[in-house]
Structures are given as structure tokens and as C-alpha cells.
Image (cartoon, rainbow, N blue to C red; front, side):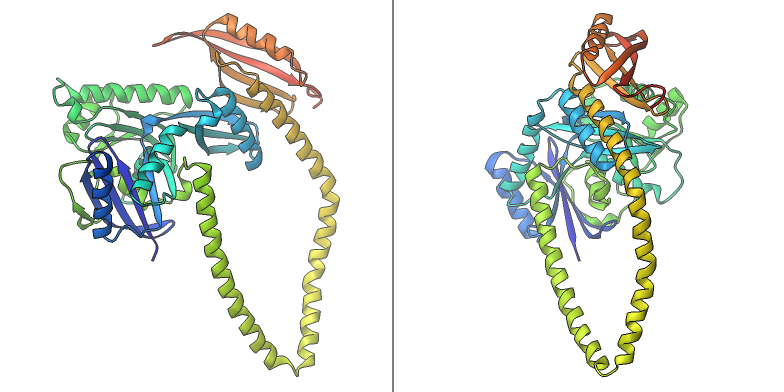
Length: 472
């Protein structure tokens, strides 16, 4: 049976989870925590540990990137086609992310699709952080299959918890650890929003009121969710990890009036799986990733690792197909041997085959008639993709885009975003007016908004591409 191993490095320890099974059904077999030493001594200690526990030969190895090392952006694109979305996200990343494109590893996932629009979340990390993780695995003699973000471990943990009872979603899951606190909003199996604090229970040891500090961070998360997803509210809160969870739960409910619950981290799993624990830590991330369906999780693996994993899978598939082909060939010979002297059976088979093929032939002729219409639709979609891509590439760093909507009946694009000053918005409009693909740009509104970092100018533009307009 297949095995999976998840490794998560924190400031003080290495957490390891081992499972058996296959997607989407994995069973937790063991959990370990090791204190962290430094340099080559650390790698040597872990190698010896993995060998002693017979874990060194596990093929599927998963690494964890802490949430604070990545940035996320939620954007709405006027397409539901996977290839078009890949291209739009790529162009958006080149224009809008704060890192140089060649120094960035990114992935995205679709939150929602309605009519011809997709709401996606883009997740990006600096390449150096990814390379450091890959190097740590190499020092242990391991080949990492996938690098993913800690928030998806919290989501995976929650999916196991949700099986045991009804939870009012969207639910904000708060995982408190020694030196880190994760706040992850989950609904319908998706990570809607996530934050991570570089502080945890040990950092709050001298604080007068840790529960109030946590409450303030929950309020910040709620504010961010309202801005990113208008109309969506946190309906319940779930606390896990370490610390005074029950007293914090009571304080949160009293201050915010939101239903809050406490779930011990290992409750959803077999407690016997936890083999070695030197001190109290939260294993929600590690256990969650070990048991979740990773096909739904974000991947920040570099391209070369994805190619290696793909090659290994293709090799396994070739071996399996070869075996199946040999069996089929042998069975075919046996069947033909029984039928070699029965010509009438052959004739019947041919007649049946003709009867089966006739409806397919009619369907092919029907599809040929539709092909011209389909080509025209595809051409229009590619033209729209080119326009949106040009807008992204032409957007300066001083302007942040928040949503792109395509008004099909009017053939117009609605573009929403914000900038620091009104002059930056006007300059952006002037620059767009020079683009050959755009026929008309109009400012629908601009309003000033106060934030903790200063004033921002929210705006919306109505853009008509060449050939668009009321008759499009």
C-alpha cells in the first residue's frame, strides 16, 4: 500500500506525519516531533531517525511552506477555460506581483465559476525560499514530491473534523503553536482567506491579555475578508493547537458574539499514532496534509520537481499498461482460438459493429456543422484574452487591480482597482488610451478610502475594446 510522509520545519522542531492509502482516503499511521539542531549535525540526526523508523524509502514526500512566506491575491477573470486562465494568471503575475517574475514560484486555484467568469486565488513565493526547502530535503537524502502551504494543512485538518458534525461555514480556524498562529477561513472545501502571525503561545507568555490579542487578530481577518469577498462573513470560529484554548474561546464569544468551539488537534485521528513528542506542539498542519487529498492543494513545487514527479508517474503507468496489454493479448488469443471455426459469429459481430458505428457517424456529421460556430466563439475568446493580458502588462506598480468583469451584452470591460493618488489614476487612464486594442476608456467613479497605511483612491473604469460596443 502507498505511503506518504509530510515534513514541516518550525523554529524549534521538525514535525513528521506518515500515512497509508491513496487519494482521497489516507489513514494516519504515525506522528513524530524532533528538536532542531543546526548544520550538518541536524541532517545527520534526521537521516538516522528516518532510517531507524524505516521511513527513508517512502516515495511520496511532502514539504510545508509557512504561510508568512507567501502572498495571495484573489482576482476575477472573464474566462472559465483552463488554458485561458493559465495565460491570464501568468500575465497578471508579471504585472502585479511584487517579486521579479523569474524569481517567483506560483500556483492558483479556482474558488468559483459563474457564467463566463472565474474567481481565482493566486499564491506566490520567492524562489529562494523554495530552493532552500528543496536543499533541506536533499540533505536528508529525500526527493520532495510537492511543496505546499501550511494553510492547506489547516484546511485538510478541518475537513477531517467536519466529518464528525455540522459546522456553520464559513468557519475561521485558528491554530496556535509555539511561535506561530494560523488564521484560515474555509468554506465548501476551499481556503477562502488565510493569514499567519509570527507569534505564538510562547511569545505571549508575558502578555497581560493574550485572549484580547487573539481577538484583535480575528477582527483584522474579518475586515480583510469583507474587503476581498463582499457579502461573506465569518459565521463561526474553531480553535485548535496549544495554549489556554477554552478561556480564549469564552473571551472571543463575549467580545465578538460569534459561535466559537475548541477541538483538540489529535481528536480526529488515532491517538496511538503519536509516537514521539518531546514537548507540546500543534500538529494540525502536518496531520492535515498527511490525510488530505493533495490534488486539491496548492503546489509551489519548482517546475523541475513537477517534471520529475510527472516522469515517475508516466514510468509507473507505462509498466502498468504494458502488463495489462500482455494480459489482454493472451486473453484475445484464447478467445480467438475458441471462435476460429465459427464464421457466423464473426459475421454477427461485424453487423453489431456497423450498428454501433452508425449513430457515431451521424454525430460526427452534426459536429462538423457546428465546428464553424465553435471556431468563431473560440476566436472571440482569444481576442478578449489578448485585451485583458495587454491591460495587465500595461498596469504600473502604483496601481493595484482588484477585479476584471466582462459585460458581454455591451462588449465592455469593467476594471476595478485602487491607487495612492487621483493623479496616478488619471495617468493610468491616459496610458490605456494610447493602446491600439482599446477604443474607449471612461472613468465610472473614484472615491477616497482611509486605511491604516494612509488614504487610497478606489476607482472603476469602463473599457471598450476595438470592435466592442453595444452591437458586440
